[in-house]
Length: 436
Image (cartoon, rainbow, N blue to C red; front, side, top):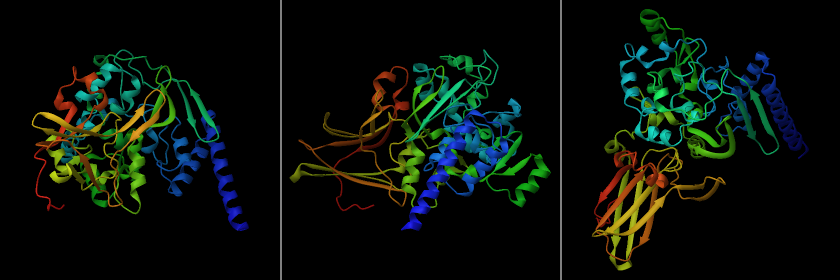
C-alpha cells in the first residue's frame, strides 16, 4: 500500500513539473533544447492528444514546427494557420505534386479536403460568419490579398484544466480582421483547401509515413526532394489538428477557446478504439481516395448504410434497424448541426419524425440532449429502435441533414442537394426474416 502511494505521488509530482514547465514555456519560449526534450518525452511515453492533458497544453502553444515532429506541431486545432516558414508559396500548391503522384492527386482532388474552402456549405457558412478563425482549417495556408502577410494573430490563449488557467500573449505582425469578404481571400492556394503540403511539407522538406528503399531510390532518380519519414502522417492525432476543437469564447480580436468541445470526432474514435488497430486512415485514406468522407457523392455515401423497416400491425409498431459496417466515431459527428432524421408517412401525412443528434445550447454550452449512434469495439454501428405509430405507414424515409437545426437559416443560400442526403426512401413493411 505504501509503495502504491509513493508511486501515485511520484506520478503526480511528475505531472506538476510538466505543467510548470509548460507555463514557463508559454512566456519564455527561448529554450529550444528544453522544448525538444519535453516534446520527445511525451512521444516516448506514447501518450495521445485524445487522452493527454499535457499534450493538449503543449499544442495550445503557437505552432513552431518543432524539430521532433514538424508535421504535428504545426497544427493548433484551428487557433492558427499553418506556418509556412521557408516554403515558397508556389511550392505549396498541389499542382507541384501532380506529375509524379497522379493517383494520390486524383484521390485528393475528389475528396472533401480539396473542397474545404470552395464547397457550397463552407461558402454559405462563411457568408453568415466571415471569421478568420474558420480559415485556419478550411484554408490552412490562407492569405489575404489586401495584406499580403502571414496571417498569424495577436493571440491570448486560455486553456482550462481542473486547477489552473494557462495564458499566453504573443504579438505577431498583424491581427485578424473582424471579418473577411470571401472574394478578397479567393486565391489559387486557398482554393486548394487542405492540400498535399498541409500534411506532407515543412521547411522545404517532404515527409512520408514510411521511407522505404524504393521511395528513396525513386526520389533520387526523379525528383530529389528533401525526403524524411514521419509516422504522424498516419496517426489519428494528426486529424485532431482540425477535426477536434472547443467552442470559442471569442474569435476577435483574439481566439479564445472555452473548455467545452464543439467538435470531438477524434476523441470519439479514441473512446471506441479499445484494442482495434485501425485509425482514421483505415476508412478515410488510401492511394486512390486521399481524404474525406464521401459526402461529395451522396449515392456512394448512402451505400455505407444498411437500413431496414418492418411494421407490426397488431402492435401498431414500426421497427427500425440501421447498420453501418465500418465507422470509428459517433454518427452524426463533426458539426453540431448535423442530424439523422427518421420519418414515416401514411399516404402524404407525416406520422413519425425522430431526430438523432447532439443538441447543445450555444450560449451556455450545455448539452441538452445527445442520442448519437455509438460505434462498438469492432468499429461498426448497429441500432434497433421501435416506434408506436397511429396509422399504417406506407412510406419510410431516412435523411442525413448536414445543416439540421439551421436548415431554415441557410435554405435560401444553399440548395437542398447540399443540405440533405437521402439514405432510404421506400416501403416500411418488408420481410421480417431479413437478417444482416
